[in-house]
Amino acid sequence: MRSVKSLFPILVFISFITVVLLKSLNPAIATSNIDIPQLPRPEIRGVWITNNDFDTLKDRAKVQWAMTQLRQLNFNTIYPVIWNSGYVMYPSAVAQRAGIQPFVFQGSDGHDILADLINQAHRQRLLAIPWFEFGFMAPPTSELALNYPQWLTQKQDGTQTSISAAGEVVWLNPFHPEVQQFITNLVVEVVTQYDVDGIQFDDHMSLPHEFGYDPYTIRLYTQETKNPPPTNAQDEAWIKWRADKITALMAQIHQAVKARKPKAIFSVAPNYYDFAYKFQLQDWLAWIGQNIVDELIVQIYRPDLESFVSKISRREIQEAQQKIPTAIGIMTGLRNRPVSMQQIKSQVRATQARGLGVTFFYYETLWNSAPEPANQRLAGFQNFFPTPAFRSAID
Image 1 (cartoon, rainbow, N blue to C red):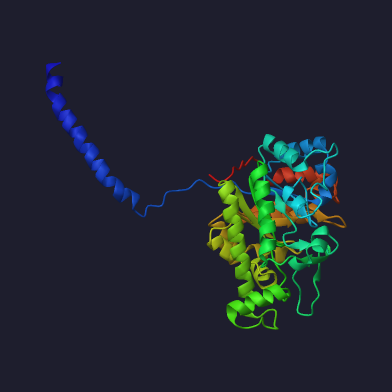
Image 2 (image 1 turned 90 degrees about the horizontal axis):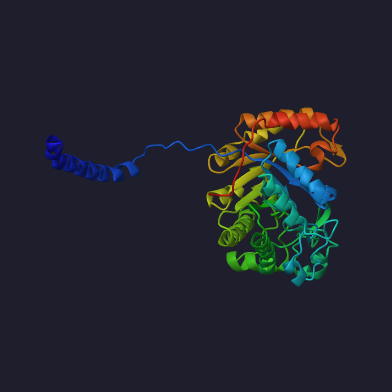
């Protein structure tokens, strides 16, 4: 005991010196260039739920079955439509103030479809990221288009419509402050009133390059550049000016979302970059560069495997997946255009081989409206995701 007591001061001194040395080393460690391995992000395994899925959406029991089935197949994210054809799919004070019927899409017992869907998804540990499908697009006969003609943009010849996958549509002017405020208010309303995990915009949060020749935009462009808009709709400076305006708006919406819900995932689902930028004025590489986007899903809807592989192998997709969770949108069928399981399988395998996630368009065509029997389709999807990959909102 006496020897131990005699050593005690020495031991205390050694401990003190050790602490001092470790503290002096910490800044060097903190500022070193040592690469600390990061845990891999769970891949996106998603599905869009569209208006074509309304028979499922309006029925609580069917929604419960759908969410249970998706969890059993190891999906982890749903993207339910909430903005389509100029209408919202939830009771909206914003829409009501704008004179738009606020509750067109109700559940079979009059319930709030979105609230039920989010609740059922979360029970199964699925992320629920509502999807503003129509963006700036609306049918010409919608209340929105009829009530606010000053919000619409046009082509050089004065026409206001274009033909899309949804038929003939008009385009809200993304440069008009009232349009910007209306869309922002809808987004903030959803983020504030519902327990969403994020918000998603797709290729319709854009403007076809032929548009932008309305009086308001002509005045704005002339004021800022001292020149009228070029007659060539694909003039590089004219393309960039409009694309930059949309980028600025996306930044504003992103900021508004994060102010209400910092962990919300700001998701975008555009077309591949060359097409998105040149023809739809979506500079999504700039969005990623400005940290506007938390996840990217690039829509690649084409039956030819060689063309599909060429698009998913593009450099900008490789660059994106180094920064944020990135996935490829894969077509599983349309109402009048079924897609074979073999095509889906080859595209999923090519996507997964490149370390990319997948999101399918759309729910009803996964196994209900399909060319093969439901059990065969279900078996195929089970093979795509053999183990779970749970996701969470942004940490």
